[in-house]
Image (cartoon, rainbow, N blue to C red; front, side, top):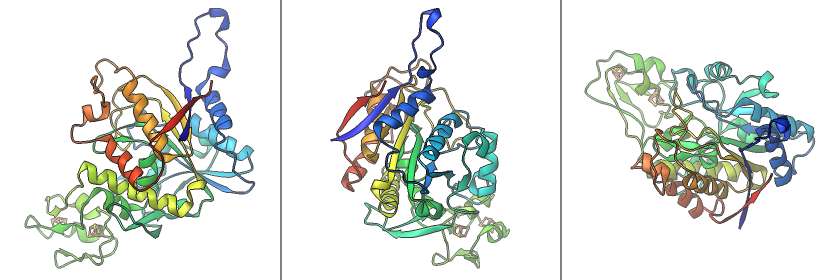
Length: 369
Ligand code: SF4
Ligand code: SF4
């Protein structure tokens, strides 16, 4: 049975003369959680440690607070490790979040800088999102995954995931942080979209897609599928709705990004990856949205584990047991994420990870005060 460590976000001080208790701070609780869970124990002097986060995009207001990332970076440094905070580019070629410089600019707008994080920011899949290491994987659906180069080169990875809902996959936690967040653009495409794009009869031959295509894969108003590296730039730039592609179903998206997570775990080594899920500001949508709706349940706390499946299962269970916040998107349902997004089943991610042997569904929850 996997161990999942938990610290509550509550700080219920009522006596006025006892108000000053720094030990109740969420940041200090995180420090105790990491120390007592042993999550950072294996870090050796000089090792390069990737802290994988999601900065959100411009407009997201409830992504993971920088002070938590900063604490982890400082604890890694105290162990002799060399931390960097990392993210990957989004699908597409045009929007700010789709290339490294824009991503860093948007991170700054969200309050994430080397100064606030106490560590440098490195975009793991390079300037435009294609720096990667190809990994063969015996996944449920994918057989090849492109792991972001700087994730592949790190000695160890710590996943710092803001746990929240996701419109298509039901929820986003450690599995998504590894499976979507640690892969280059081509694998993001393969997770989200079934096959390379095609050009349909709406095409006016304006030439915009030719200019954006990074590999000149559009010849005579047709996509050469052998050349196409699946970036989605052509669909993003076409104003005529002349690029046809098909989004994956909720189940297939979940299975595909779990395949991607497997490739990351296989490449970096399972023993070299640890997971922290922050059940704070549990919004209905993921941090890829340029807004953040009200949370669906109250803040719950922080979880830590070395098991990617157990930590996500425990996080889902905690959300399902929590009371719903009135007027939020969630309703009182046994499965709150499925209750919001009828087409999405959170169990799809969990079952896919179980099938691939990524971790354990059963866990022991150990509270750290
Ligand atoms: S951008 Fe759209 S309309 Fe223009 S050439 Fe490409 S497919 Fe045709
Ligand atoms: S044809 Fe392929 S590589 Fe070229 S822009 Fe479209 S998706 Fe990207």
